[in-house]
Length: 300
Image 1: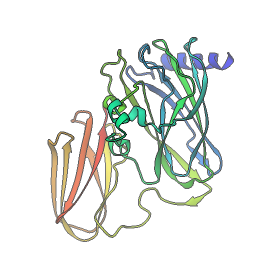
Image 2: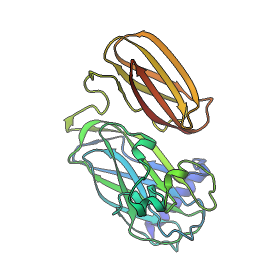
Image 3: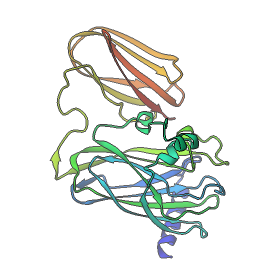
Image 4: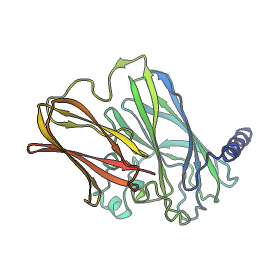
């Protein structure tokens, strides 16, 4: 009972300080800013129940974006709802597929949304999907504390943007990504991305550009998702006439820029979306007949 009291006290403090934002599921993330390879990486997430859950008895659904080589070791799940049992966090036997897919896609075993494409991840990163080992219904306004431990024995030196995703949906969480619509049903999926951690003491590697490519190459924007400004790196193998385009996901052109005789090498484009609505945008570059594009997620 002592730890639940501590959790309740912590959440009261969060509310008092005004940190909690209406409509979010992931209210707070605690994790180290740096670790050494071989040590345990521990993160603690405070997750809000946006509405009473009386149809889908599955809480503690968490996806973690982490460096390749890290392995989930253990986790715990606790709740301020006295009727909700505490338990352990375990690996999802469906690897997140049941909450990413719609029910029809899951049963047909095809056509599911690719979360890596939707959100965009960086070189050297991968998702691990986890669930609680207790399934139960919970009351509105409850808070859950999830503690996660990852083994980093096979980690690689570098700076990594750790990300988290959770949902109250049973199916098709991507349709409700970072939206407050229909919160009383409830349907919602929430992310908390770009929690940086520096990893030292292992093999040295750069998860971004460690060496120059020899062909046209476009990297995922950083940060992603982003609030207002994001940066995109691209490489031109030779001096070229470059076309840069940004479209909404529905195909509407937002921005176009033509750069004649653009010098070869590595370049960075800074995209300011302050005047644009939240949503998925396509960033594309083209030289001659070669084209590359990425998806970017803008959140206000």
